[in-house]
Image (tube, rainbow, N blue to C red; front, side):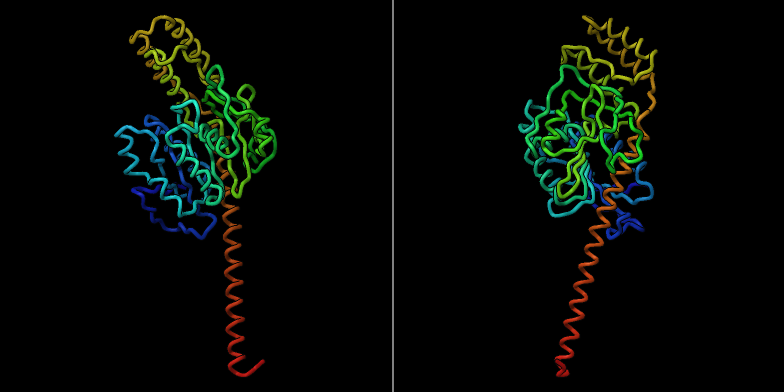
Length: 354
């Protein structure tokens, strides 16, 4: 079923969307991605939620952190389509997705948006049924909540990894014992530290370590170190960007190819180009590499697993919303019964009946 997307800060009016139904849910997206990936990230989550909706009616509301550095074009787009995160504080969302972005400082707590980000973390604990923290947002959230610091790797972890289920949970119900998901990050968190702070590790992936983990607060917090939402060519575009940074002198080392991503012929072609690039950072060679990447398509081998996980997440939200609505109905019925009893007592008193 198509997702209803808020535009210009106004909720869309659509037949059948009823806040009082557990089959109609509102999901917020706080999109912190850099300007170049802003709209692509929005599209990825919209596509994934659509595939996972399974008959639900979902309204997507978009928010921005005011302190995230932006260029003018991105700022104009956000101002036209996104609401400020300040609009969240006096409302409730059924679910929330918060993305990360490349940090500007070694310490996440020194990022310019840290204060508003941590306010979102506090707000989400009592004003959502569940929140997804994606990649760097996961690292920032657990740093704020439990002081868990991420550990930097020597090389970037990038590619498609086999994620093995570590324990049973509703989030991974119905998924294979091992499934594939993309990762793209320089940092990770230690499983022992997570467990020591009450987190539950759901999946882990060989060299990639912890993949997905959760913690139950008043609401369920879900943390992805990987990227279930990625499209088939997202890692390709990131690799092309990283190659460009090497040629521009912004990186000392030529980037490693994403693991288990390109087919053998593409790996051979890119390996040959990488050998030529050593000590030869010419614009002609960069163009040749860019053209080689642009001519290839990559199969999405993780879409079904990603859709299954997000379908389970939406089901968890619906179930919690139904419990909340039921509780409210019971309280309303109890209140009505008290009013009825008091009215009847007054009538008996007026008639002199004790």
